[in-house]
Length: 431
Image (tube, rainbow, N blue to C red):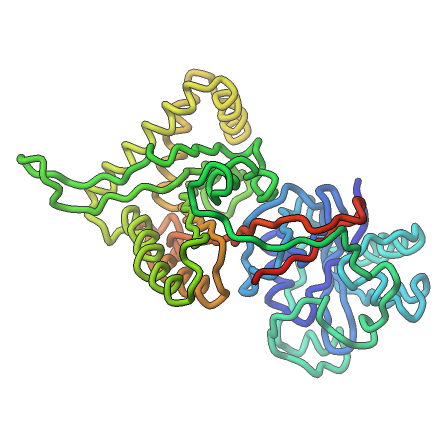
């Protein structure tokens, strides 16, 4: 068992309910670790109530909240348990007047064994089988007393300034490890200072929510081309050919969708050559967005079914061929399939893998943009565009069966000075 923490969802019933129903926890700072025991809390009226707890499982990039970009760390939650909501201000006895800043601010690890035991006793005393879902009704008033805020404002507990959270201790200070300057990548492909080769080399260190054990990275940026239809003269008559820079096959048994997901990775870099606002604007709208749209449309129902099926067949064949050539990948897939189907026989692995890959292409595709600069507004615009492409009309895959989108801004930092090797933060600037 790891540390014990309280995850405060602020006043947002939406965020709190998503945490406990989707069994996922998000943190705005990198403070938590797999195995931590998390008590979920929410402010209702003048009280902070706890109604669920669970153990942090594997890191995930699944972020169901509307303000998802704020969460730097996300975990699946296992062994979720529920209780009648109780007031966590009982911790005043152990934390004193600054108990809110000590136990709620930043989801710090609770160090006092007496406080941990108190939470345990109160939770067990009020335990229930089903989650308590906070809604805007009279029942909330009965629990919380005065309820002076009934809206679902998306606020993290870390930003609420009130009697619970306005006391900060010395340990709240950021431990700065040194100073760094943000410099430009040379371009996308330069072998020394290129965005793509550097990110590919350090992919799993950068994006720790992608587990190497539960993903297969195929970084051959010429392998997966979309397929067009040709006539008898071998002329392309339908479909525009496009090629993602990499393919990431991810496995998540607890996914709300299919356990296998197809992630199309596209690297884009303004670099040293595109530094003016007009250059970036033209490149984003003239090159990047059209390229992402081509990826999305290829697998969407807006594309001719023959093109889509031919591309899926071709890609599945290439994925399976790539796996078959690598003994370690073959063993990894074997672990995935036996985890999904405990009674599966070894000779059935390929058939079941093909079935799961086909399901993923029909209902679980995400396009991932890795770029050196992107504003929140630009990200939301692209996300809305990509989400408009539907994957299938099959209702069994859900009514929101659309292509997903994520983006990550990666910056190259040059060290100026390091003076605390035990710290976790750095300062950087960009001219």
